[in-house]
Image 1 (cartoon, rainbow, N blue to C red):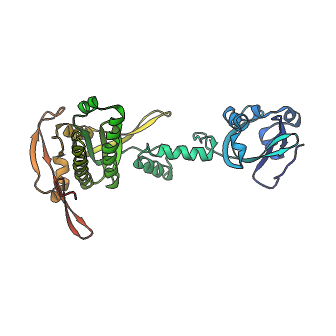
Image 2: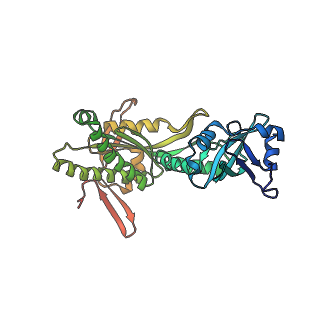
Image 3: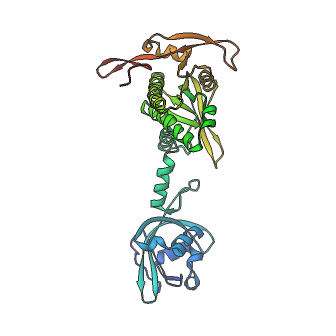
Amino acid sequence: MFTDWSSDLDFFTLVIGPSLRIKSISRRLMNRLGYDRDQLRTLTAPRLFAIEAFQELFIRKQIWDHKFKNYRTFLRTAAGDRILCQLSGYRHMNGRGPEYRMVLQELQVPKNYQLDTGSFEENLRSNQIIKKYISRQLASRALSAVRSGYDRIPDEEREFTFLFADLVAYTSMAEKATALEILEMLNLSIGATASIILHNGGFVDKIMGDSIFAVFEKPLSALMSAIEIQKQFNILNLFRIKQGQDEVQLRIGIHSGQCLLASIGSDDFMELTFIGDSVNTASRLEKSALPGSILVSDATFELIKDNVENPEAHDLTVKGKRAAIKAYYINRIQFDGPRGRISLGVDDDMF
């Protein structure tokens, strides 16, 4: 009854019979779980497997319609502990009913780490969905942290360039449209904005309904993104006007400065966020900007002034600042391209 198919291999074998009792088990797995022969005669799948795994493997059973691999689950030991195993298996039919034949390997995971259980294929598909909701920058920083031996993303303080963009008169537009029309408009406008930001090396930190917050390591990349975004909105509005729809305009504010990038939260949930007045300044510049414009702080301007054509200077009084701040409306920049100097402006011909 108790056969050992793999005494020389680092694997366990297990067969569950038609009555969901243990029909065959490798000696190594029996020893690892701590059950003796008498206990195994009465041991059933519901007692051995974690409840979620038992329901999927032996109640729903669809997984057995074909050979499967890399299913992770916990097995209960005689002492009441749990061991994490990865199993592959298939269903064998005989005259007495189905047998569920499995090969298992124990996974050694540090105590502070938690692996998803269940089907590897389903977890992979789930991760592909989740991936779209997590910024590339966050994923990259997490990987760097792991490679450096950290169990969390380390805090970092240095200079960043922050971009805020917000749809003008969104509330009044929303009052005239259905929820689906609003969703379509947001996906088109904010989606295009996010794509341009990512293409230019920035990363989207937050999308807040009708607005977007992005961060850049290079200030010129932020300006390039802002001009491309406003150009994209000019194209979008051509089509909206032809369809008898109102124009959609965006305000953009940009500021560069020191900021702390840190993790906030608990072990159950953490968020990587930027902390500092520089973020607030960029947000206030956006709120002070004219519809369809790009308003840049003096700090950012000083970093990219050699690339700017015909800036328009203003002294602004913004909320939270005692003194007026100097800012610039920028519509055109120059930068070096593969074939020489390139000039890019908001009002360039689009076709």
